[in-house]
Length: 153
Image (tube, rainbow, N blue to C red; front, side, top):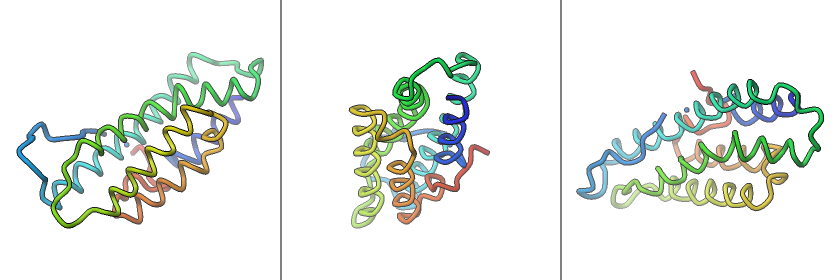
């Protein structure tokens, strides 16, 4: 199990800080502010995966007695989903600038779909493929901190 968790976490995290809104609900952000806040949320997600992986590794030193389904559930529920849920919430709260960010909004929809699939069936999310695809879409939308190559550093 530990080996499979390491492989999946490394694959999805080759593994970032967070924010969500600025606390100012006065209207849409500028394009630069929107991107900066979205990037910060992506950074928090990746950093969250790294921190949660370390925590779960300390707490579950021997997972070889767990079934593959139980290992996947542990990986998804305790490592992948919490930062992903925060990212979806943070990005959903941002007010996009007028006339631009359709690609980012599409990436949010993709992250939300991945999150919902993982909540319904951890095995679908455990291999990292669905999340990697959503992260690639976010990177293509200009959110480099969400890309599959982003790390927690």
